[in-house]
Length: 213
Length: 256
Image 1: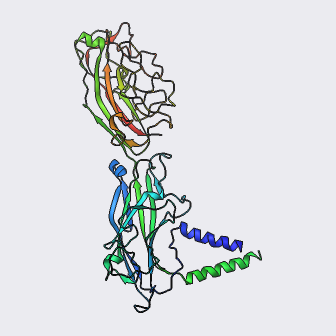
Image 2 (image 1 turned 30 degrees about the vertical axis):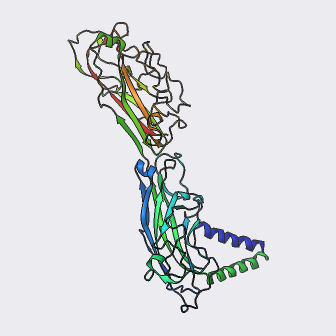
Image 3 (image 1 turned 180 degrees about the vertical axis):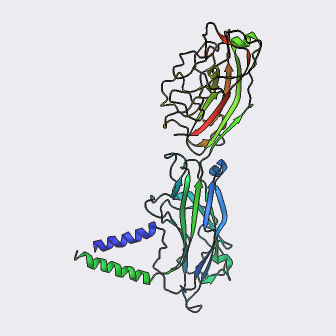
């Protein structure tokens, strides 16, 4: 039993480290898993090139670089369903051999040993939409410096249907086509490295997860 | 092993069960790439050409000093060293280039090869990192200009190969030869400008003396050997009157 528990924990831990979506385990299979989806509008690779001192010191901000639009459909008729979802973003550095706190290094520039490898908490994100439904809407947030760290955009235990546009975390069935300001999210990215990091080319990935809860 | 197999089977079954009940609806990925390019930025403010015209006896004896003629400001994203190197374009690379001869130039005691070490520099603040500098008459150009003859203390470092960093025995403006001696990345823009390790003003002096032998001129490391003229003797020879030029290059380099 001890061995089993260890293996199970190892699997969960591995999922977290690789930035996999985590199922909260509270869903009731009330959402249509086939046709519900994330529509992500974003460049395939969000690239920030720091080639001037002002970039290093002042940072680079990419506003509205990613736009997440949701289509969450219910399985059952209106009034009888309990389709409820959460939206989260997970950061990942690709795993070993990269240390869990650092960006994956693609290339080093200059002389070895000069500066520190950048850590994952360097990346800042800001999420908002027209109805301010996200948690910390419009506020810059940092990931914890750990591959697999998560920032929840919507994580509401209470069922909150669309339509009020009152700053609540809407999490009922609906789509961006009918309630754009509650089912679309604009994500800004910012990195302000300062002058302590080793020059090089680094990478991480962010996974947007839409999960029934 | 017998105990382990049922455990593994149970583990696999539960994993399958977890997958079957997974509530994930959809996911999408974005890759973020950060390209941190190294920046070493040296700004030099001041005239591109600094003239020393010796047409008074007092100037030969006391020399001419150009205070604050050059201001150097640094911005860097990496640890760095800064040094000055004087050189000419002739074969040796370390004597002044004679551009014109005044008078007949017929005196055999008049020497046209003046060492680039005859140029003296003085920086406005101490080199902040010289722990491992070794053996030179000075580790930087901080010493004051004095009336006394002091061999080599302020003489500019000379080399025909300006991009090869000076040895541990030579003078640096900031940082030094050893990898443990450097100034950390930063900028005069954010570090306090004039009072920071990223901002230097440089004074220049040339003191020919009478006769014109440049009595302070000497090279590191010991600074004990006069070299104002590269041939002849200090007792009988002197610099041939004429127009001479040399180059001073300031090199900002990543610490290594």
